[in-house]
Structures are given as C-alpha cells and as structure tokens.
Length: 350
Image (cartoon, rainbow, N blue to C red; front, side, top):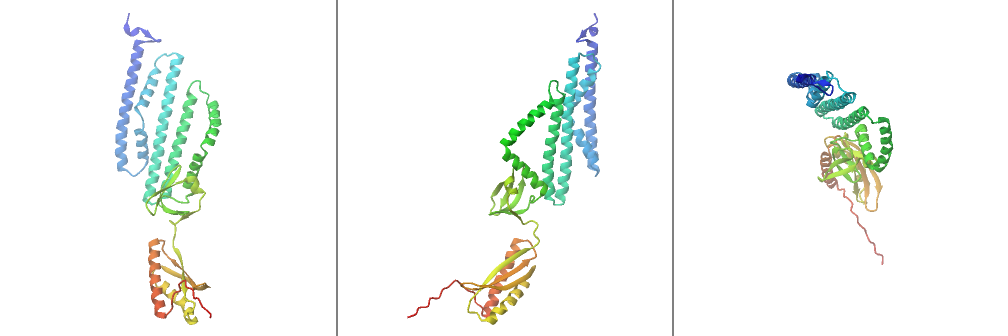
C-alpha cells in the first residue's frame, strides 16, 4: 500500500504533508517579508519628515511571529477536510490571535500618537498638554483592551457575553462601593487633567504648604516643597481645596505699614505720602499705588503703603522691598521723622 495514500483523520498523508509544507512556507515568507519591509520603512522614516511612514513602521514592527504562524496554519487547514469541531477550533484560535494582534496594533498607534503629542508639547513648553496626553494614553489603552477582551469572549464557544456583562455590572457596583475612595481619586485626576487648575511645574500654595508640582498621578499628586521634601496629596483632596497657583502671575502686590511716633508735627506727617511715593517710584519694575494715613493706633500713627512689582519673581519683590525699607529709613532720618515702638508712659500724681 502506498504510504502517502494512507489516511489520517480523514486526510491522506500526502494532504497533511502538503498542508504542513504550505504552512511552513507561508510562515517563512510572511516573517521574512515583515523583516524586510520593517527595515526599509525604518530607514525611510529616518530620511523623511512625514509621520505616515513612521506609523506604518510602528504597525509592522508590532506584528508578532505567532500571528503569522496561526494565520499560516489556518490558511493551510483550508486545503484539508477537517471535522466540524477541529475546523471550529482552528477558526476560534485564529480569531483570538487576530484580536490580540489588533490590540497590539492599536496599542502601538496610541503610543505613537502620544509620543508625537508629548514631543510637540515639550518643544512648546506646554506641560499641561503633555500631562493630559499621558492620562488619555492610559485611558485609551484600557478601553482598547476591554473591547478586545469582550470580542475574544464573544467568539469563545459556550460563553454568553450578555450574561457575563450583566454579571460584571452587578459586581462592578459592589466593587465601586468598596473602592469608592480610589475611584474618587481617579476621577479627580481626570478632572485635574481636563480642567487644568494646575500642571507639572506650577508653583502652588495649598493651605499651609507651598511647592512645585512634580507629578500628577491617577491617585495622587506629588509636590516638591520649598524646604525640599516631597508632599503627596490625594487628588480628591486637591479638587476640594482652595489652591493658589503662582505660575500665571504677571505681577505682585505688596503692602506694608509705617508706624510713626505720635508726637510728630503735622507738617511732617503731611509730607510722608509724597516721600514714600518718590522712594517707591524710584525702584525699577514698580508702580506706586497709594500711601495713606490709615489709623491712629495705641503706640503709633499708621501709614499703609501699597505698590505693585511688575514681575512675578518672588526674590525680586523681596529685593525691592529691601531697597524701599532702606531708603525710607534714610530719608525719614534726614527729615527728623521717627518710627514708633510699643511704649507706655506712666504719669504719677502726688
């Protein structure tokens, strides 16, 4: 009897060998073609400024060998006469691997888009967009894999996806109640990313704490304080807090009080506002606002001075205040105007 004519599982040995040879040939051809195409596309992408060849190169590079193997086996199986259960198993396996490969392609496209957006944001120093893209990338990947998982389950024999989704919905409510604090921080992070009350690099004041935002995570935000330690805030706490953001300041308002001795002559008291206005206006990047004899206190006659520094730099504002204080002391000393100090005079009557 001819050996090649012997039948195994409804097909001759020759048919099995032909199918095997076809599968191996397809795997070798497809995998070799992928490597050649990927190499040429990568070289082309480095020479051109368009992003289309980069995207195609990303897709080709993420195509896995197991996908070519399963696809080749499926195509080779079409030449055989297989029982219904065997053909169904091959078809289901092929669809599952195909969906996983689609997920890998989608994952690559999401990452490719995110890298482009982040790179553009870095060039423009747009930290807000970079932060938003990172979170959107994560959310998009989660949604993609969730959809792929549902498609895979829908193609598995004996799995009722509708019933499974309903069960997951009921279980999801219970899980949501159990982890509501975590979900609260997650949704708070999305609120921070989309509304942008602050972004990475902003200088914030939250209650008694001050610092610079270093990282906005899904659960917490990390801030580097002025003293150097790392402060960690839950995102849900931040959305409920009153936050001062100094990043977008264009100027600083400065206020200080001068306490003058109560026995200062009236003519010298009247000259103080013009003296202070001249001192403040002489400083660079300052705009004098007002100086008023505000009140008569227990120990001093109080003048309130207000001016603006046309620069948000905190150190510059301190330097200007330092210069103003020295000039006030010098001119008041020359004019014979004395500052008041908390004192009490006790009068004894005999």
